Length: 379
Image 1: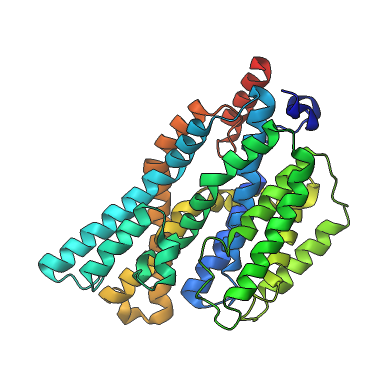
Image 2: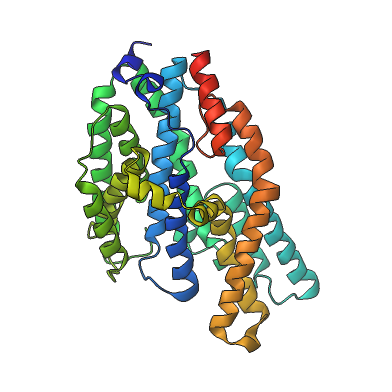
């Protein structure tokens, strides 16, 4: 437990994160530009919502792992991977099974809304199930419907190694090198991406090593918080302005000119402001509609692109006009996401909450507070 002393004990310093409704509000802020970019082609940089998801993910996962180390003196890798499987696996499985059914319908009945190539579709299902869609995107082997799964692949490939690295570094007492080490890693990813394909945007945008920088910045934010390094209060409004300006930019080379990394750094500042309860921003992001969309954002991300393509291929609602058609597809996506969260994700989330060794960051407020209290007493 010696290395744990490098961190302030969370139960004594109020650092137990638990459930933060405002972070669901940030998830809403991440998913909305992704969807509007896919459906209405605006904003053109809406894909940065995925980077915001990456920053949030790195922050939350690292926070959970460090909290577990401080409380238990170790990190259970098996519990971590089980929690990840329970969080992501069920909803993804339903999407892949639905996609498989459509492929079969195409083969047997010529169903027009199904993907055209059975072979390519089955390969895409395999890539999706094994979290390797990012490689399939690079090789152009993924049907459009499942292409958004590249981001899940990037995250899971990162989390194969990150808990083990964090456990090893903390146990070895090397915490003082961890933050500068991550900063060097971020810079290395930026240089690698710049060197690989600066004149060919799109080819390496989904590769694992060239997108780890967003997650690394989220991990950095978590470690900054645990080391009690305070971000100046004046930086939060500036970060909001910067995020808005970058999101509204039309720079097609955003991944190679440093803007995406600046976006992630500003997003990390916003995340820290939310968990430090900066009142105006925290209250705004905790509004019920934003929290609701944030809670179903994973299912929305999984389904929205596939449903848009299925609706357009089938010709459903085509007589209503293009924009009305895609708006109806958007409504269907929301309905499917609500059903997915309520009947697919939540039953498995309850299992995840029961096996968590720290206050679960995706549990409802009452569950999270009770969990946090139990953990403090147990420690």
